[in-house]
Image (cartoon, rainbow, N blue to C red):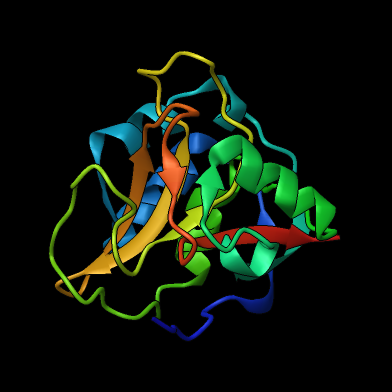
Length: 170
């Protein structure tokens, strides 16, 4: 299965806005949130994030040298070995606002215990080791609704080789 990379070296200003302003921008743009994204957005890391310009790229787990996919820690280690950096977790909503043109997902399944089709995971170090706390964000458009969704997983979860990740180019 092939896909078109939707993040081709795109520079996005991340941070620099109070949470209330960021939430207002998401609402004004019609971005839908799931409960896990709302939980992440309540984390103190969003209280007063410093502003920085980051250059994002998209890669699959396979492009990172994992032809059979791998666990989150394996995917993140492969990210570093290929010279990329993990995204700050606050990148999720800013990247969502910058990629409103994302293609519509080929199916409408919102949650199925697997990486959703058409999703771009914002690869970030988790804010908590608690398995019940969301690990990060992913971007997806379902039935033409633009979503910023949070996800949960533990390190036994296997990421598919075609799983798409947003990474930071140093």
